[in-house]
Length: 541
Image 1 (cartoon, rainbow, N blue to C red):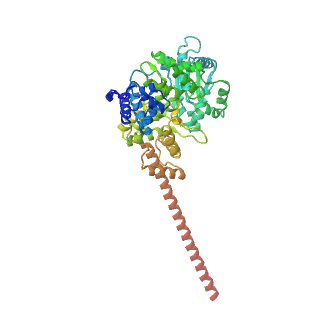
Image 2 (image 1 turned 120 degrees about the vertical axis):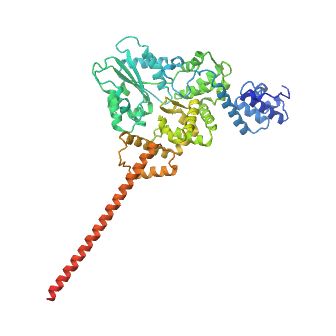
Image 3 (image 1 turned 60 degrees about the horizontal axis):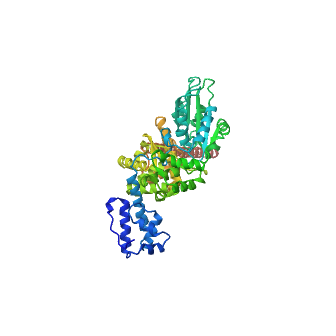
């Protein structure tokens, strides 16, 4: 290893640029020999030399050891490494379609990339064939949505014969108005002898997003209704495990959860390896054995880590070396628990002040804050709901940035978080939620109340409780009117107008009452005075 190294062409990319900077740092430190640097840290001469070779991005720990051995500022260099890592990921992310989904769920078109769940798909298919209404339960992050869409749906479509061969397969999520939105999809009694399979994914939205008990009860009753012997409707519910107790409060749902449900179990080591290696193999790629072993160990004790695993694999793929996904690339991406935060922070760091604030408002719109110990959950928002948060061009740019980073997904009309794992895995988002938790609760109430008001034709005379009105008015005043949609602003203005008219009417009533009391008192006084004079006059006579 010579004392002098030739400078690299920094224009060749972020790896070469960082390596060239490391070489200049070493020269500024007097070009210490690598064997001398190795004695100051736990890395070998070859590892330190390779860090400045420009052939691949070194891991963060190696880079910091190199910098410390040369007397550099580790905090400054850590920031430089992260910039280089993000630039490399952006540079490589366009090289073909990724074999991994990141935080997004697998859909029915992703069957070729869906590995490791054959046993559970068999069990779910058998249960669906046996029971008219069945349920799939599991914690957040266990892969329920992917199992329903990429596992069960292709199996149903391949069903070629028998009385339950599907004539239609429909996938819905309850949303805020489940009966109004999806009631027409449910066949009336006896109207359809052929089989219709209705998959209700994210059934917990019935409790987190729908706050109308009439809508909720009507939707459940429609799903569970016995339509007679000619009924061809089969229903499969995807329920998050922590909301299963809520289902037990309803007799019909309780029997489904108790007698016709399948729990999503943790993947075995063999299934995990297949989920890691299978998609890469389908794309002609190789996963380094050390990486497979590390990932299997990282995920083995966490049954809800599949979104973290998928996102870490996606980021590892974007940093791959040739056809190989390496352990070094995995560590550069931030590992199982750091990849999501690193990706999200990378997006946030590239935003200016205005767009960063719009990003915060957009993401908080996609949160339904938990209460009473219930966890925070995601909610879909329409693009129209986001139009009031800034200029349309800026909102579009922010949404595009979040979508490219696979932090949010969009079906055209609505957008939402790619997965609820983002809430706990990105500390900045968690801090935003905690700081604005009460404001979020008011915001959700306002959004739902305004939508209901709009649905009935914006009738005048909106009545809002004085306490709630004062809180929302104060919130709107502090925000300067920003952060409210046009509909929410109109609803709040109508409520305030009704409240003011009510106060004026009360003041008028009180004033009239006071005048009546005063008039009555004067009349009574005059009467008694006249009576006293009359009595005195009689005594005088």
